[in-house]
Structure formats: structure tokens, C-alpha cells
Image (cartoon, rainbow, N blue to C red; front, side, top):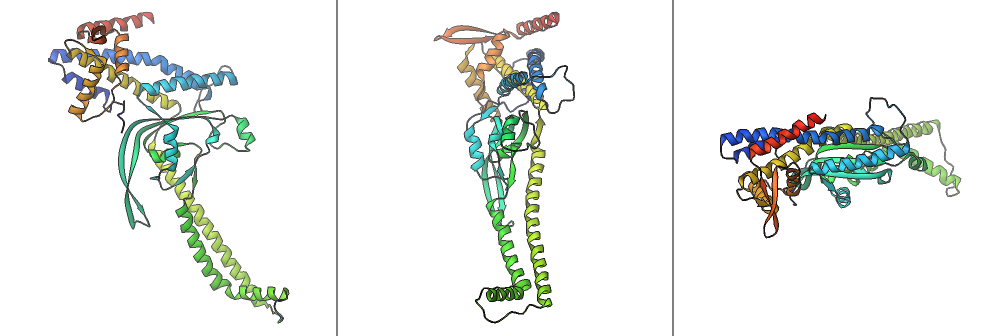
Length: 416
């Protein structure tokens, strides 16, 4: 399995882990002050991104409870959707989410579901669909069948977090298809965030997925209906059917002897047909109830997997992106601070990944380029060409770095 960029530790845990790598208690105290300053500045940097997401999402926010000063034209709305999609993708990338490819989505539709429900998705309803994932693991779950008599282990890929971005086609498409959208508006954009989603069950996250009976469910219901129907026909309608066949044979010229139909015959036949009709209704109700049971199971499952919807999603993701940026910057700065002669990007990357693997049994693909870019931009590290033409990075002392961050923070408030 490919290593993930996501660092599976809380920001405070990373602060404590990095602090333990420093030599003296005085240095550790100074480092934690540095961490607070760095976190505050990164949080401030993300504020403008959050405002941009809120403003661009406002024209098509289905949960908005505020009024607009002026109507938004279709062109303005489309521009807002494009800008929102671009910012949303940037935030997801910063939060170390990966795009789920179309190949993965097709695999999900073909793999055996843990949910024991067959879902159908009308992909033509969507103008744009992008799924993102973060945190991937291989799990095993025992699947029962034949009323619990048969059990088998099922190995599957599980995603810890899945973000969904879907934009629907316009009203002209649905009018041409003579379809009535249920639960969404044409041209609308929805964003959702889920947890603990098996790869094989990704289709249940689509807003227009519909429950369909699996072949085994149809066989069970069909067999029951066939056997039960045969019993009803033989026990309740046997004599009446024989009498009717004889009557039709007489009318068709295949029988010379006349058939006498008495009132008792008609009453028996009517009772038999009533019993047969009630049996058909019972089997149909059984089919509908089984479908309702599946739909309830689907809604219950989504209830516990759903983390956030629409505007709440990018508030959550902004916080996740902040945390990932802070963790990456702190880790890179700490290991550069420990190095007396500086490190190249590759050496720094290898040291951090080996540290996680050996000390915390965690395999990850550390985002060294993002971490160094932030530190260089904030002037917390210096860069020089010293080792075979490779750039070597060195960290400023903690006191010097804190002074730079303090000045930048003061300048922000002076500017405002």
C-alpha cells in the first residue's frame, strides 16, 4: 500500500514529540512558545482562504439563512462555483487528502459490498464529481450468509475520511429527461464529509443512489412466492380451475359433454380468487418491506458515517489543513534545528520518515517540499548550495526565529 502524506498525530502530540528531541528544558520551553507563534500566524494566513470559500459558496449554499442584497446572475453563480472548486481543491490538498480516481470509483461499483445492498447511481445527473480520501487501511470483517449458517472473512480497503464534491447539471437537462430532482436543485453544488467508508461502498455516498434488490434477494422472494402460489392454487383453486378448463374446452369444441356451473361453484371460485389475490398482495408487501428495510439500513449507516455537510465541510477542512501545515513546519524546523551543519531536502525527508517509522511505528510520505516552502517563506531557515550542488537548509536559532515571528505578528496588527 502506498504511504500516505497525512500525519496521523494531533498537532499537540507533534509539539510534544518534537519538544522531546531538544536537549534542555529551557530550549523546550522556548520551543513551545515558538510553536504558539507559528500556529497563530498559519491560522491567520488561512483566514483569507476561509473567507473566499464562504463568499464563493454563498450564492448556492442550500443551508443559507441570510438574505442577499442583489440577485446573483447565472454567470456570476458559475464564476463563484469555479472559484470555490479551485479553493476547495487547494484546501483538501493542504489537508493531505488524495483524489479518488475514476478507476477507484469503478472498482467500488464492481466489488462485493459489505453493506449487502445493491445501489444504482445515475452518473449522467452530475456535471462534476470529485471524491477525496485521507487515511487508508486494510481491514477484515466477517460476512454472514444463509441466515448466519455460513461465515467468511472479507478483506477490504477502508478510507478514514472521504470528502465529496458534486455539481449537478442544470434544469434544462432534467426537463429534457422528464425527471424530477429529489432532495437537490439543478445546478447546485454539494460538499460532504464522511468517516470510515469502505472502498467497496463509495457508491452509497452519492446523493441520487437508489436501492435495488440483489439477485439473491430476488431468488429468495421469488422462490417463496412460487412455492406459496402453487400451494394456494392447488388447495384453494384446484377444483375451480379444473371446472373452468372443462368449460373452456366445451366452448372451444374440444369437449362434447356440457359443463354445469352452479352458484356454489361461483362462490368457491370467488373465494379462491380472493385468497390468491391476498397472497399476491402479501408477497408484494414482503418485497416492498425488504426494500424499506434496506433503505433504513442505508440511512442508519450514513447517519453514523456523516461528519459534516455543505459550508460546515470547508470549516472542518480549513482546520485540518492548518493542522497539517503546522505539523509539517514544526517537524522540518525541529530536525534542522538539531542538525549542526544543515541538511538537504532529501536528507531531511529521510530523517523524518525514518524517525516516525523507528520510534512511532508509523510509515508516511512526508511532504518535505511543502514544509520547507513554508519555513523559507517565513524566513525561519536559510538556504545555501554546499553539498554537490544541492541546496542545504539550516534553521535559525529559537530566539532568532521567535523574534522574526513576533515582528511579523506585530506588523499584521499595525497593518490592520
